[in-house]
Image 1 (cartoon, rainbow, N blue to C red):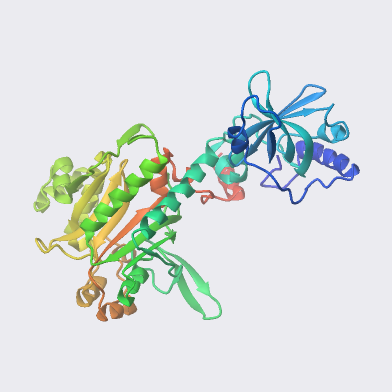
Image 2 (cartoon, rainbow, N blue to C red):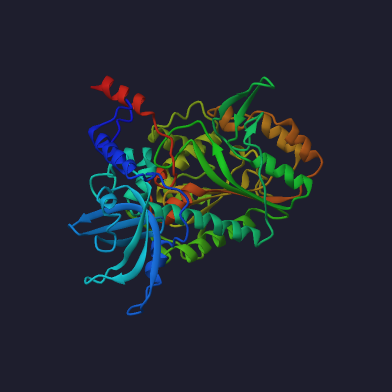
Length: 496
C-alpha cells in the first residue's frame, strides 16, 4: 500500500498503475459512471428459486476473492449487504476477456447475467456483461479474512468496512437501533429538535470543554458538552416533550469507553419526574433488544448480561454500604475507606469523597442493568432535592456492564435555587466539574416559569457497544479520534 506517512508509491501500486494504463488503451473509462438496475447481493441470493428457468440478476460491488482457472474466472463480489459469486466464462464474454484478465482484488465492478447454482450448490451470477466501475490502485489486505491490525482498522475504516465481514453489520445495526429510538420517542409525541453546537458558556454537564473562536464576532465559543440548558429553555417555551440525538464534545482522555466527540440522546418531558424517566429508559432499551438482538442474555466481552425485566433499582446509599462497607452518614468511616483506596480526600468536600469511594467500590459490581437512585444533592446542581430527605437529589444513573449508560433527573425549576447552585463550588472539584459558570440567561428563562419535568441522557455509543458486544468504543464509532501517523511515528522513535 501507499506509505501513509510519506505519501510514496510502493511497487504494488506501480504494478496496478501499469494495468490501469492497459485498461485505458482498451478505450475503457476505469472509473465508470452511472450503473442502474442493480440488486443487493443478499437479495439476489434470497430471491433465487431452485430449478426455475430464466432467473437473472445484476449486482455491483468490490472484488474480495478472485480465482482465475484459465477459461473460467470465479469472483466473490461484496456489497453493503454481503457477498455473491460471479462466474465469468470466456465462451460468454469473449470480447471482454482481455479486460477481465486485468481485474484484481479490490476492483469495483458491475455484472449481469443468468442466476444459477454451481455443482457445489453456490448461487452464482453467470455474467453476460461486466462493467468496470472503479480500478483499485492499492491492494486489499493480504488475507481475505480481513484487516488485522487494530490501529490500521480504525485509521482506514474505508478498508475495514469491506475487509472485515463483521464490521458492516455492526454499523448497520447501530443505524437501525438509532432509527428505532427515534420511532419510539416520536410515537410517544416527543418532538425532535436541534440546539446549538457552539455555545458562549459550557454548561449542562461536568466536563472540560473544547474552545474555538468566531472571527467575525471576535468571540470565544465552546463546543457543547451537553444540550441540557437549551433543551430546558424549550420547556419554558411550551415544547412539552423534546429530544435530540447529536454530538457532544468533551476535552478529556481517550479510552475504550471514551471518545472526545460522542453521540448522546437527551430528552425532556414536562410534568414528569425521574421515575417516569426510569420506566421510559427500561422500555426503550428493551424494545431495542427485542427488535435487534438475539435473546435477553447477551455477551459483553467476558460478561453475560441479563436484560430481563424488571431491572434492579437500588439506592446510592444502600449500594455504598453493600460494597464499600460504609454508612453514608458516617463520614469518618467514609474518609477512612478513601484513605484505604489511596484517594486524596483531605482537600475534598464530604460529598465529593463519598462519590469517589462510590465510584471506586460500587460500579465494578453493576453488571446487570441497575438504576442507582438518589445521589447526594451537593453533587447534583441541576436536580431537584428529594422532598423526603433534601440531602439527596432525585437523580438516577443506569449502569450496565460495569459502566454508566444513562443519567436522569427530576429537573430543578426553581430559579433562585438554581442560581445559588451555579454559584456553589465544592472543594476537590474544578470549575468545569461543578458547572460553576453562571448562565444568567438560563436562570432568566426559569424566572418565566419552567414546568416540573423529567430529563434523561443516554450514551448512544456505549449502548451500541453493549448490544453488539463491542468492548471498545472505537468499534462503534466510524471514525474515532486517533493520533496522526507522523506524531505516532515520532513518539515511537523517541521511545526506542
